[in-house]
Image (tube, rainbow, N blue to C red; front, side, top):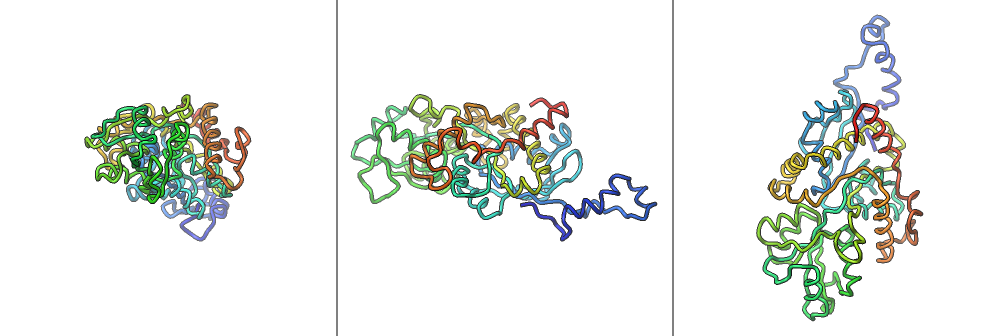
Length: 395
């Protein structure tokens, strides 16, 4: 949770200096109460984890565009150490410090959350569900991004569609290799559910030669490019921009967005990454939680409105060509609205994951809206958007 840079607590700080803030500097001086030097005033530190993927573009857009946010909203992140540490200004006042923590995949984020090392994070929806099932004190406080997972094959293979892929691998007697970012990632869950529907067998055990498909765990989205480029696998599944990088390099060929796998558009517009916050953070500093969510809501709005701005921010942050990000942005959508279709998508995750034996705790056997009280808390983002509306900002 939030920490201060001095031993004085935030509550004590407010008590001892609130009088000066209310009366103004002159009144404090004449009354003998000295104002605190704001340059050294203690502010809380927020630990913010995310995944190195353009699925988390809103965070990157906010961090890379200080002047734009300052001019338009008077709310911005000032870099102290680019990509690592920022000062968060709200209404022009330094309100917090933000420690930014990069990870490779959702389960990595959740390990940090479980350890108490993170206050707020963008993570895979399925990874957050697994944390909650295990009893970790965290909640989904807002949707953030939908879809954006892609299936790519080696460019030299004579396969160009999903149906051709299924025909080539099902019962062929020749095992096909697919690289995945991890077994509990969004891409892996959706892809395996589609293979189950098609009756295609799969394994993660290299000693099992009978399965149609062998999944190879590349332990992060960033390693998928090497999997295909170096011939480690014949195909990859995962989050943008990495599948598009292989296409840009001429190594990979696009087969389909994973939201289009069968059956019956089950995964169309699926929830992918969500914003989560720990119960400790929400209880101890609810006003700060709302303020940081205001900035994220604004960044989601800008990310959707200006895809060129988003592509540029992600390109610089992730170290990939802007042309790749421009293509990747076409398959990505960002939102803070927990719509009925979005919630239904989360219910689908919960049901699918439970059927796969991934739940053993509080979410085991729970279906549909019965998960709401255990998983969601949209009150803070709701207040954040209400505050922005009060400032004349239409979301």
